[in-house]
Figure (cartoon, rainbow, N blue to C red):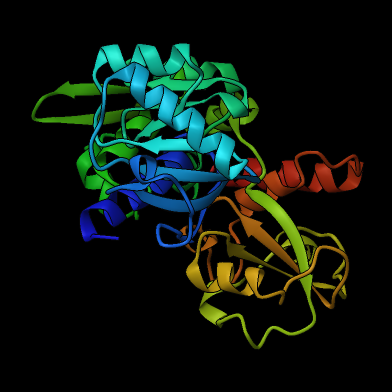
Length: 332
């Protein structure tokens, strides 16, 4: 795969994950492996991926025919490979877009729009982002990281968005989209002009209650393993009951659990080679939607992310301790 097309796939993964909160894992370029008629294969790049647990084939077309032909060829591809085919495009005009949607043809234009009917007709476009956020009523990983950083580490009140973006592995566009989500939730406003947008937050002691319905557990998946030697120390952070005992007055627990970033290459390799399993093991491994390192302190996950890990807990004592913890942090 040439560098330009490789970057397009990377941008697609980043867009789905950081802006929309959709999990996407790339398994590799299979352009040389797929057996297809010449008119379907010539010049195209085929990449195997998993979107929200669903195996699919991502296609970067060498040339774009008209919308009807494009939809027809994509349908033929899907019938041959037996899985959803997703077109990955640098840009798309209005006519082709309408034809693809009319034919329920999957496509992604990184940073602009996505249509994945096999996921339930998810459609998000520039200018329609607020509707998408309202529909799912949940922050993207980037928006959640932004808010938790503001509350725990470095207040962003009055800070210009382009400057905020420099301290995260996110683009200015991603941080701008995250700020719009926060604005939709009512915890801040964006002000300024073309020279720079900046953020104005509501009182910090009111933010948690206002944003709580939009905040989600950072845990994407829980797995287990019997040895921590293969997970570099810098990639793992103490979490779950052990972290709970450090942050609150809950008794210390004997079990060990670690949070890791699910999109880290080393973690994906360990998952694919069978180091982790879904049933049992000495160590609990939480695969997080965002990198716990962004908020962690002294090798431990941050307090507010930890509180969100227990969001669905029915243990009244745990909830009580975490509520007290949150109040101390948000009033600091």
